[in-house]
Length: 285
Ligand SMILES: [Fe+2]
Image (tube, rainbow, N blue to C red; front, side, top):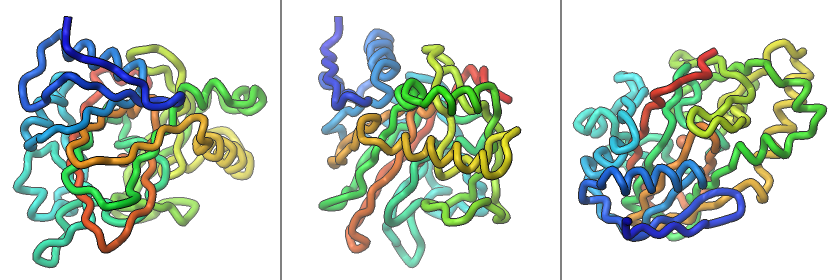
């Protein structure tokens, strides 16, 4: 028996967990309960936490090995190099003329973290240190529900196929058909992936990183992807998280996408990200 309570945050996904202090080591019972809630709701929110880097890393390690932040060393600034290898800052703050984090300002398209890698990290934890007065919300889209809602014709057309994923570090809004920069990363994943723990099928494609579906003409692929991307944005599949300082959010990259809303450029936003590797990359194409 633990002190944990779980409250759903929307019909799409997300649940708030109360009754836990993440500055203290969590017991196996508590970790199992949080993991269960996370698998059920895809996104969990724990509010009012005061977490140092190591607290967040310790929390993440209760669910699996923390992922090395995959950004190449050439793109890591000095502030990042001094941190734990797994810590990435998402921030628009500039200190001494240098950004202290990545993905600074404005809106960001739906994506899944590290989906440009052949073995994407299963989870992302994000902790709010400084939050603007408005905006900068994170919208989560539930890809189990999108899969269930796909029109049969579209599902039949693409079932069993692979999709090509690509990403250039730092891009938040993709405004070209194909990435072609020097720090390009690519991967191939099945269009529908069974979740490695629940076994349920998910749609594993997203607007920021998925460029084409194998075996379809360019036009067919574009049409199918546009239809899927439009569906993923429908409000009935989404939970929009309005951040408060001290929020720790953990989401499942295997069954959700996330996007960011715009926020005032003149206000500071700082979040700390630590990801968790997937021990069972059963979908590797
Ligand atoms: Fe992300």
